[in-house]
Image 1 (cartoon, protein in one colour):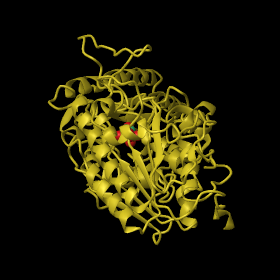
Image 2 (cartoon, rainbow, N blue to C red):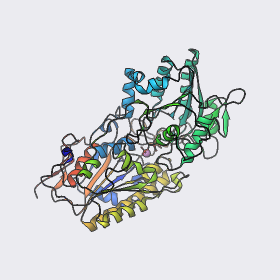
Image 3 (cartoon, rainbow, N blue to C red):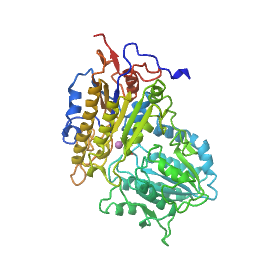
Image 4 (cartoon, protein in one colour):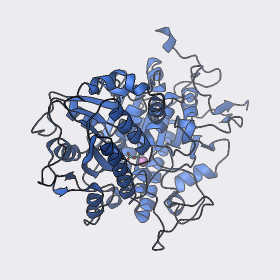
Length: 555
Ligand code: 3PG
Ligand code: CO
């Protein structure tokens, strides 16, 4: 309706091309040898930083500023891009699941009632990421769900674990499996037949995203549903310890395994009449398995056997596709995003990244919604990522290709907003390879330069920011900031994101004189960016958006 119409900004003009650049995993931290952004040659980002404080500042990108439960929660791409695109802070999946479990409301909901119809005669299967990372899932939520489900009638439970090492330290998987085993033992004492049935590393089994590599999901399907895997073990702790010794293996890339009984028979394939819950709250890496579990027509790989199950997600992962149909906790309702408003106000939008981050600047940006709002005004371009590799071997990734596409889109003058995600500092940072991450940061900086040069040519405006920290700190530290050593005296590599703030810079020949960062939003975060960008397009933001970061002073 008419409510989509945005008011004109009283001082800022329309018609400027705005480049919205999101560096993934690019935080601000003290300069030292473990700060890859500091070590890398990054002249473009350095020059933005050394400029005027009126046009460069830091914003919060973790914890409550992005809708996470506590200030100890590091930022991540889902909540970061949600905040950037939606301009408001929504209680996110982690928090919503916490509340539903604490209040017990989860057990009264439609999703739980649906799966519990299988409890009398079938098995309850829980599939998901096993760690306390809090990015895709949390171990304590799994523990509560195991207990609650058994108290609400589940008699036979099988857990299909995915080891982490990406949102938490590599090697921590062993401890998480031990904790889970203790919980399952307690359930068995109470007469519940509960065990781990299969497992594998999150980057090699099940948790692919944006259709980068369906083989990953197939390996999971084979182990979880068919009970088939190259490795068979009696005990999951032993499985994880042994498989970590396989060359090139680590928590993220553990090969798939199944747990077998004394006769060598898998203890928990998924069969007709069973219930399945994917326990991750975050969507991107659950959409593919959800499709495999739910869709009748499916041609991404041969499922061999498609059991008739009752399936629910921890959350609904895609509000546009309504996938999956059943879920235990309602997802945040992220509506009226800036992208939707701007399209309603005639802003022609171009969005681009490579596969592994493509959904970040589209799906997450638009409030967990696939597709465009108006295909006549929007163009989303995905550059295929290299698949089947770890990105430390190809740290430049597709940064320059993204830069070129953005440059061409800007120079074409067919778009008002050109939005990109440059993935390098995050994707390579997650490998824990410090040298490669330095190369990654340099490549990202070069891509930024290409885009800023194009903005210069068309008289446009740029906004450069990031979704959360990663490459600026590659070592685990103690409370006073000193690197922590392991028992062999080696530093502990930090593969995960951080709690650091991220930079935001504005500029370009189209930036009206007198525009500067306000000094009265010192605690500003990613959610303040949407209103800022709307202003740069010449509009006032809706009144319930987090306040803009900029003001216009008379010159
Ligand atoms: C991943 O899914 O790769 C990590 O858990 C989080 O990284 P992202 O939030 O940067 O995507
Ligand atoms: Co990341």
